Length: 446
Image (cartoon, rainbow, N blue to C red; front, side, top):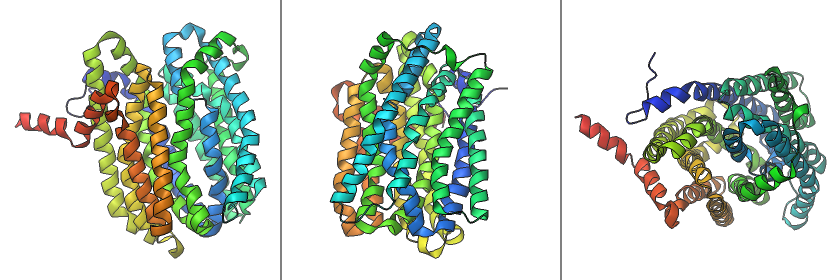
């Protein structure tokens, strides 16, 4: 059966990698549905806006360090496995050890950051220290997730689906049970850690079921030096990306308190819940992009242009639907105290267009080895978001944070236009953003 693709897309590549992409999308779709029903709706309504703010605060704070603990290696490890499949045990073992060490080192830094915020901020942090201590263990537990790179490199997206859907179904069932039992907020805090543990167990089990074993992993100093030498800019990029994606929530808590954070957390969940789409598609197509770069430069550029177009078409469609659905969602599914979130969601969801483009262009930067450009563009987004939130939140409140996010995401995605060696990619994204290639193809058909 011929698999359809959007006009102008490379049919051969699209068909070849569609199966892996489809499995990844199914996995993320399951996660999205669970997140919408349980995390973004049921739990906030059960806890109320203030306690929901308390619950989300530890995860927001720890997320900055979680990004650093991956050392920016996810895509790079996938690339190494594609280039050196015979070195599987050395690559995975080395990456795992490095991520485990970074996770342990991150713990005292998380605690220090928490106490510094408490000392300098006008208001005390929304969550007590014990909640931060629990959630911080995620940095250690997530080191096992390096197995994800193995399944990506071997184009076995269905196993990622098994792990993610299985872990999320289990997590949803436990959280729903906690709501029915009227459990205290501390139980939901423990579930933030349990979510990562469920994933880790699933990855190890399925990796073993494929005839592999984590016991064969070996640490190699030369490989560690190689991975760190090329991936360290991506590690800092991941930190800055987390900073510009999460700093608005910390600043909202500092300026307006945990109740505002609780409402805004639902906005972020509903808006960012769609970000699984570009991650799934780009992750699945990354091998095709790398192969085209090696074998056919013209096809390589063509695939990137088509990828940008696909990202824009999908993200704009989502933004339009969510813009009209936002008032209905908050009126029907949330308590009245969450009503201010509707206006903020209408603004925030449009930032997704630039997230989709950012994810797609990120693969180009990795393929070309432009890791320093990734670092600088992530830093620019972080600085813009911090500056605008400092100005917008005191003046405009929650919707100001949404506008700051939109502008910061646009700045980050289009940063490549201002760098000479990546300017052509920037123009390709701009053409996709304004539907120029798609309109041209449709006009030729007429």
